[in-house]
Amino acid sequence: MLTVPVALVVMVLCARIPYPVYFADTRWLMWLLGPATVAFAVPIFEYRQLLRKR
Image 1 (cartoon, rainbow, N blue to C red):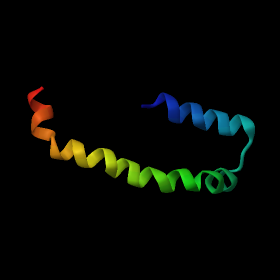
Image 2 (image 1 turned 60 degrees about the vertical axis):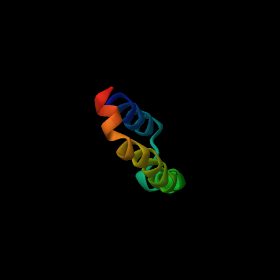
Image 3 (image 1 turned 90 degrees about the horizontal axis):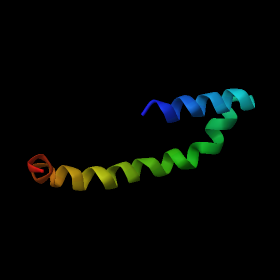
Image 4 (image 1 turned 180 degrees about the vertical axis):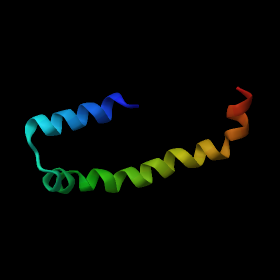
Protein backbone atom coordinates (compact mmCIF):
# COMPACT_ATOMS: atom_id res chain seq x y z
CA MET A 1 0.00 0.00 0.00
CA LEU A 2 2.93 2.31 0.40
CA THR A 3 4.93 1.28 -2.65
CA VAL A 4 2.64 2.68 -5.35
CA PRO A 5 2.10 6.14 -3.80
CA VAL A 6 5.82 6.50 -3.11
CA ALA A 7 6.68 5.41 -6.66
CA LEU A 8 4.13 7.87 -8.05
CA VAL A 9 5.57 10.75 -6.04
CA VAL A 10 9.09 9.86 -7.16
CA MET A 11 8.02 9.72 -10.82
CA VAL A 12 6.20 13.05 -10.64
CA LEU A 13 9.15 14.69 -8.91
CA CYS A 14 11.70 13.22 -11.33
CA ALA A 15 9.61 14.32 -14.32
CA ARG A 16 9.29 17.79 -12.73
CA ILE A 17 5.54 17.88 -13.25
CA PRO A 18 3.97 20.77 -11.33
CA TYR A 19 1.22 19.75 -8.93
CA PRO A 20 -1.50 21.88 -10.61
CA VAL A 21 -0.77 20.15 -13.94
CA TYR A 22 -0.79 16.71 -12.32
CA PHE A 23 -4.04 17.49 -10.49
CA ALA A 24 -5.73 18.82 -13.63
CA ASP A 25 -4.69 15.79 -15.68
CA THR A 26 -5.85 13.26 -13.08
CA ARG A 27 -9.11 14.93 -12.04
CA TRP A 28 -11.16 12.55 -14.21
CA LEU A 29 -9.51 9.58 -12.52
CA MET A 30 -10.34 10.91 -9.06
CA TRP A 31 -13.92 11.51 -10.22
CA LEU A 32 -14.21 7.83 -11.26
CA LEU A 33 -12.66 6.46 -8.06
CA GLY A 34 -15.60 7.57 -5.89
CA PRO A 35 -18.26 5.42 -7.57
CA ALA A 36 -15.82 2.53 -7.96
CA THR A 37 -15.08 2.58 -4.23
CA VAL A 38 -18.79 2.49 -3.41
CA ALA A 39 -19.36 -0.29 -5.95
CA PHE A 40 -16.82 -2.44 -4.10
CA ALA A 41 -17.81 -1.37 -0.60
CA VAL A 42 -21.55 -2.10 -0.81
CA PRO A 43 -21.26 -5.84 -1.58
CA ILE A 44 -18.52 -6.26 1.00
CA PHE A 45 -20.71 -4.57 3.59
CA GLU A 46 -23.73 -6.70 2.66
CA TYR A 47 -21.76 -9.96 2.87
CA ARG A 48 -19.63 -9.04 5.88
CA GLN A 49 -21.02 -11.89 8.01
CA LEU A 50 -20.20 -14.45 5.32
CA LEU A 51 -16.72 -12.98 4.93
CA ARG A 52 -16.11 -13.23 8.69
CA LYS A 53 -17.09 -16.90 8.69
CA ARG A 54 -14.62 -17.70 5.94
